[in-house]
Image (cartoon, rainbow, N blue to C red; front, side, top):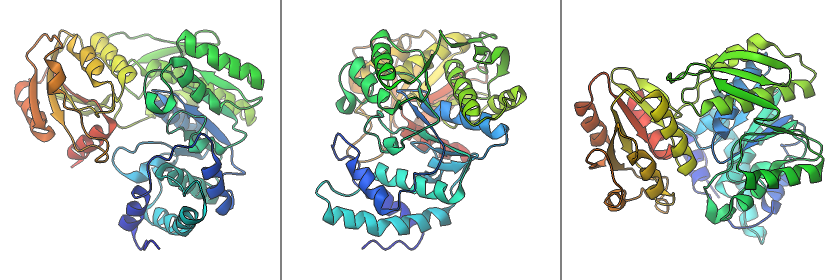
Length: 440
């Protein structure tokens, strides 16, 4: 029996659960929630998935709805600084005491399921999701925005039955071992969150993925709101990291908004968030307040996504943790940082497409690459040996290698002048480590 007496022992129990248990259904999660009294029932939900952008869409949607006066719960992953960030209301994380109390409540039931169920007890993510449901059941926010962990169809969050709105931000190459080796298969997993008769907002998807999503929506009678067809957004201040956008869609025409989140890829994410927010407000019979949309977008913050943590020289953190994410980041470098020398400190998990990701960075003329390492989230998910693949990738400047990431940052700081930029990227887990350094 787990001894959970304080916050640290609660975290130890959570992180000590199995990470993956292959099973193509939700039986294990539903069994666990039933033992807890089905805390997921009776709440209003928005459900968001996507290869990239889902965290930013959750953050902007929360900010818009909170600006409308609603109490908004969010469940996100991974955390950047502290675990508590994953479960929050109006951006305020769950307290240490509440997390400890709820973990103490679920631990005996998790251990009982370990022993009594043929399919095993809850995984770490199952447990995280259940803790979120319990917390929101107690606090009763007006709406809960759930971010899918991986995929959608068999994700622990997909136990909810009747979300007000769902969203698929992007479909790209990531987690192929779990989701499939074609964009169609990956899209099928993400389309698994679409629910009968409920609207689904869809970002810009590859044609192969879009066909799968359209088929699923038609089968379920779910109306799709598709980027480029039903809504659109355009940046109006090219060359600036902080975008001003023009949005058109649903009841908003030629809306001009400044985004609090930096980076060109947030233009598309903001469009999805504005559309999701409008559809939720419609479903709840709440009038749209355009000034609240403006306020929510401008004030939104999301750590580790083109986050400026120092000004001279500019130090930017971005968790471009997969190939689509790196492609989006390099677009921002080319368009908004083209007049600066960029010192890029990069560390990537070994289970990602790191050779292709490095190729994206190496192709940019003003990028100086510094390769480094970090501990990784577990011994089974180490940091990749990036130096081993760089000999096959042409670069504009000599590549530097510094295994200690703190020393890599110091090296970049010595070489960059105040008009240059230092960009730290490659893994959200890496960004989590680095961000704590800049907060001290």
